[in-house]
Image (tube, rainbow, N blue to C red):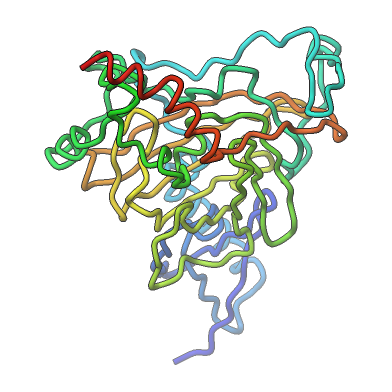
Length: 348
């Protein structure tokens, strides 16, 4: 057998393995980026002329680009929800804002009308979705309208009916809810993105990204060092997250291994231990970030569905102090004593 030489073509900053006379498709890991999507090896025989090599490489690049194009589009742009569901809308920015240090700061009104382009591979900063937009974020309201509901499986409907939220179309009295967070459990993923999503700080390092949430002062790690998911994952409240840059301004994150005791959102929508959460962090420009979230869980839903679609965040200054927002059992006890228990008792 003739000796083989392996070469790579560089296209648009991403490295594609291109096939020549024979294209051998490599198995893909759980989560792949644009480079791995090509998944092919080029075999060049020693002794070929340069022209022959270039010709075979160009032909291979066309084939690889054609095969990978649907995958690349799916990675870069989040799937659009049905027209009846719509987009996560932002709010008009207030003229002034107040940070946790009780300083009055200028709102987005003073930001240039034509902000600078988004920096490459950078979503770091202090990001604000607005004073109320993140309280019940999402594009699937629990309003009783069939078109707004996720596509449940029979098991998904069964689990949904076991959950008793204190908000939405199926809400119960405050004292009758079985919402896990009322016991002090973490929200987990993707609920942290869908309920009480307030000012969010993102800190980047070459190998990982920290997402710091205001609610509960919790944080999670998104690994960006090229690792795959562990083979034997223990369930975690926030799961295991891996992120890949699919272009200069979009980080796509996949999360697995989320503890199934959590709810997917405040409406009590269920998930299994097999759920896969996909997030798109897209930096539109210097001052704007968009977040989209998809839930994929074949045990609970007949197909993946968008829970959040392009929720806008505005960039705050580096000296913006984030207010404290923590679940404290002593405060919750007072809430139950003064409000939840009397209201629940009067409703029975």
